[in-house]
Image 1 (cartoon, rainbow, N blue to C red):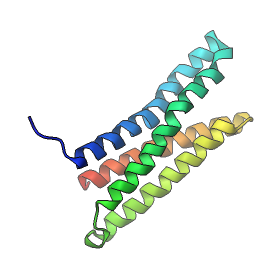
Image 2 (tube, rainbow, N blue to C red):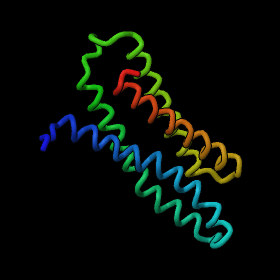
Image 3 (cartoon, helix red, strand yellow):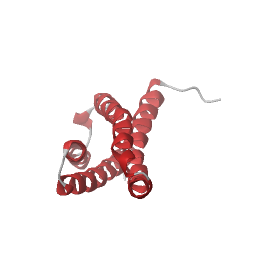
Image 4 (tube, rainbow, N blue to C red):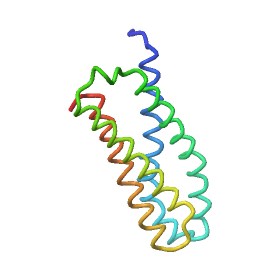
Length: 136
């Protein structure tokens, strides 16, 4: 059996947190319309329960993301890599901001735009992370 390394653990934790953060948003997007129809009073409770998993997962993404960056000698990377890192961090900030707006929003516009932008930006951050790891 191949022995795991600290790099393996770091990547696993980052991937697990991304699966919860991104995958959970899309799973919830599929479940909420059914809940609204079948049990409308339950949607807020389900959203709060998801938030209790999603926000800690986002914190793990931030921590392991900084750890990932600490393992890279940025001086030895090319400009394209550096720009991609910058864009990924920016997109992740957009995702977190949009999801926060969705979480605390009261209007249908805040809920809809926050959710849609948050999910799409989260998906983009996931893609950019894979791009960084594989080199394109």
